[in-house]
Length: 198
Image (cartoon, rainbow, N blue to C red; front, side, top):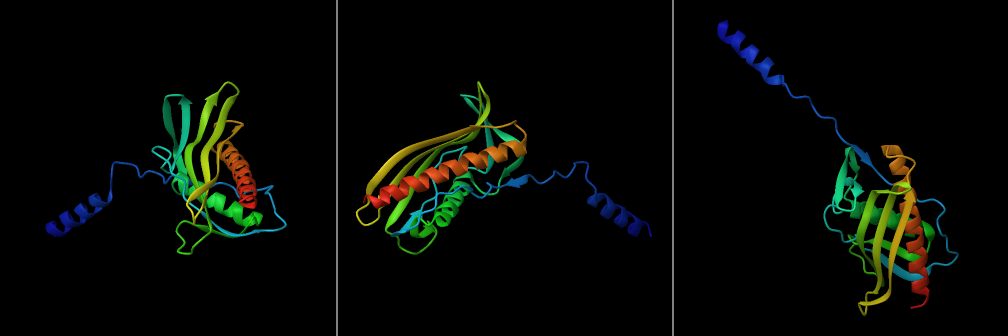
């Protein structure tokens, strides 16, 4: 009987812990693009959208804040649903497809071949403290490549920014989405005009 009591007590104690179970972080996503550029006639070419290149900490799922020019901080309690480059790629992919700019748009994970590839480097995707408040910044270096010749048809640097209403998570997400929508819309127009001139 004593053995059974000791065994039961051991099982009860094993199920208890003095450490609280941490809450799962909220998984955040960019809102779908609105006010998209729409083209009456698609370019007769297929476009591959590569995942942007990025270095740490941008190559992570952390929601980043820059309180100064020298420091990055991660927002507590929330993160992007995927790494930042993948979130940006998927948002661009959706925007290109919805716009009808190209006959076919695919991701870099597709085994299909394409005539053009959008290559990009992501150097900014964070909230920053500024004189006018907290602003969200997206910075990208873009190249549109001809896959047959591997030559750059067009090259451009984009910086898109907007001031957030506050540093609350919901306000930051609205601003991240608005800035990403502006950046994606500008990228689609730029790539389309570049494709027309090739």
